[in-house]
Amino acid sequence: MRFILLDSPEDVRFRFQPLSFSRPIWELRCGMTSLGEKLIAKVGAVDIAYFVAPYMADAYRARTGAAVNDLASLAGDDLFMVDPRVRADEFDVEPVGPSHIGLDDEGGVLYARITRDEAAKLPASDIGQFMAAARERFPAAKSNLPLWGYLWDLVLASAEMIVEDFAWAGRSGIEGKVEKPGALRGGRKDIYVAPGAVVHPMVVIDAEHGPVYIDEGAVIHPFTRIEGPCYIGRKSILLGAKCRRGNSIGPACRLGGEVEESIIHGYSNKYHDGFLGHAYVGEWVNLGALTTNSDLKNDYSTVSVTLDGRRAIDTGSTKVGSLIGDHVKTSIGTLLNTGSYVGAMAVIMATGKPLPKFIPSFAWLVEGVVMKGFGKGKLYETARTAMSRRGREWTAAEQAMWDVVFAMTAGPRDEAVKRGRRAMMKA
Image 1: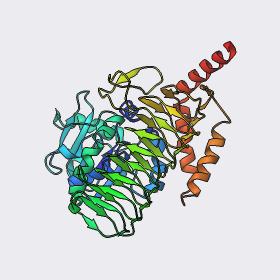
Image 2: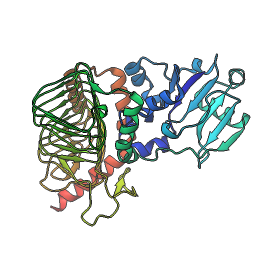
Image 3: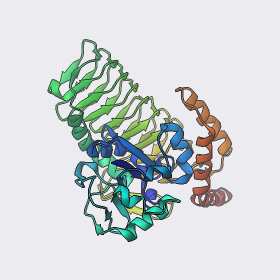
Image 4: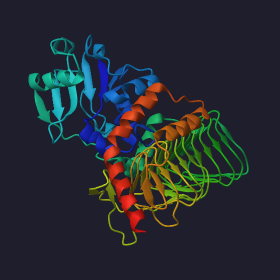
């Protein structure tokens, strides 16, 4: 059986912006692992192929070295194709069996089980044609599988997923180095310090209310408190951080100040004091000193988020912080409003008061006004420098992908720039 992760249509991917601009939905994190890793583990797949939005195929192929948008992967074996919105923890479809299609409420394909012989009869000049023919040929039925709906759903479920992922990993105990004096609270069975991880003296690891997993090469500096459930990714560094419950910190991050129930995807810095709560932060983000977000409204009503600059979506939750895209940079003292959307590549200058709840991708926010700044070329130079400092390369494929994202996000950005110009003329 060949397992194929098939990214969602663009109107669905929209719900996971700004993180989905530069990665398929299955790369999004929740708990200790990505959505794709969870599905692969649940199915027990070994032979895996991927189909992504065409504009990001070259960049994703370069990052992973995997079979990406390879039509040859549709032949030669039974196929089990799954939309990454499907929650792995409640996924109970057998991967092998008669050809069958599972649909969501809108008629989209959530999964497709196609035998090798039947797959050979389908046209395969492109993945869209292949799936359309499968819809017509095989029995299809509405599926009641639970789905991830929006990006903030991952944030709100991450603490619960850490508990499940910790149990799935089946590891506990101290294999790295924990220096004394320090404190380990809760059961040792709920703490895992991986080989190569170093916990300095004067650190509290509190697993009383959930497990704590510190991955390989992570370094925890003195006066840090880590409350479970919590996952600290490989080679991440905590510097006197108040790491509250529910955090999932990806690889090679640097974290200080107070962080609560947030996901930081990887390679990002929140080095200094400031509060980050119920947020999803992308890669290569730098949050300047004292950058803080609100995650609770004063009247305790549910939080709304605007994904397109126009229409607010009620999250149904009273706790939602910020959604921060890749390569965002904030200045010292930045204050982000409850339910803020900060688009990819945005540059933010603090104003001393909470900023607009929607900041477009590639925008420069100066004195509270959206501007074009010095253009995308300067942003690319900064990205190249930031990535090289972590041993990663800004490639031609990466830049081509971001060029498409720049064009995709032009509408909301241009509207915001025009409003900013009108505001400056009135001032």
